[in-house]
Length: 186
Image 1: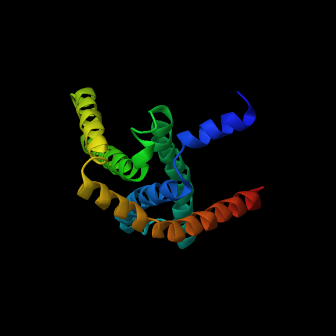
Image 2 (image 1 turned 135 degrees about the vertical axis):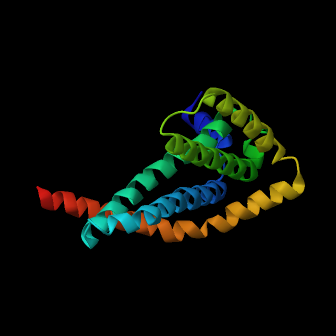
Image 3 (image 1 turned 120 degrees about the vertical axis):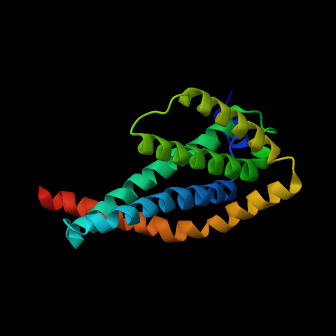
């Protein structure tokens, strides 16, 4: 296979840039929203022993972790689309990708809440995970076949792109703050 043929084969297996950006917008919304929720939850107690500088640095570290987490989560639907046949996932990447991301991240948030509340793993966790995965697979593939559901997921993805304009600059500033802070320590 020549380089041009290989490049063509790869490009057919990947979604378009617009679809990836829309799915990434949903990821950004959920990941950064979850971090803001927990940060604001812990903020009142932190105010007793942390200075404003420390609070801002803590938030900056959280934003840097968020950018890395969101990029890792973005790899999930891209890899699923790359592995599965083109007509199964890539043809309807936006609706299926948004559905997969919403279900995956909400399930992870729910499991994190359960594990945090119980201070350990709940009994039957492997069965809960398998049942969740089975439901997710069914719902993700139904997202491409039910027109109204598909349209709703596509609209959510298209509208979530606005969060890229908010949180990516915040992450860039956070990376800069952490870089400057760590350089100043040397």
